[in-house]
Length: 171
Image (cartoon, rainbow, N blue to C red):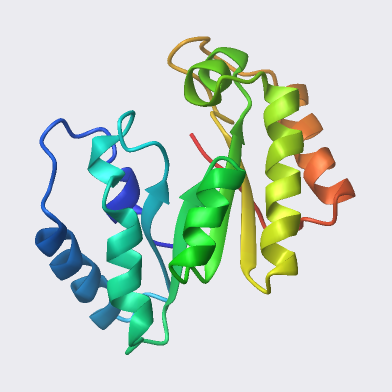
């Protein structure tokens, strides 16, 4: 699951033009990678680098030429709605194991964020989409330092109990 196009660009201060992102995505798809995360459906003011994610997906899902699955990161129902509208095939939905990171990233504590992610993931599955849920900051946090293992396991258990079995742990 290649995430460089999204993860590699999201914190860059200089916005990469859509045409360059499209060329990058074309190269990834031609390389034979099976799943490519092309962007995130987040607030464009908070993450300007991802403001054109909807258009990038539309370009590549309208006339799909690659067997690769295009995934998109979403953090809430609004992001899910945007992704569904432009043909995302797989949704990656994550909540942070760090309370501080969670509140800065989503405005919610970890427990509330997990429940919202579970709801959005179930909506994506109901729409016939593939889903991967994640525990962000599973190995540590720039704000809090080490994250207790039990907190990560609690999140994983919540996902499993909700029937969400494609789970990733992220730093």
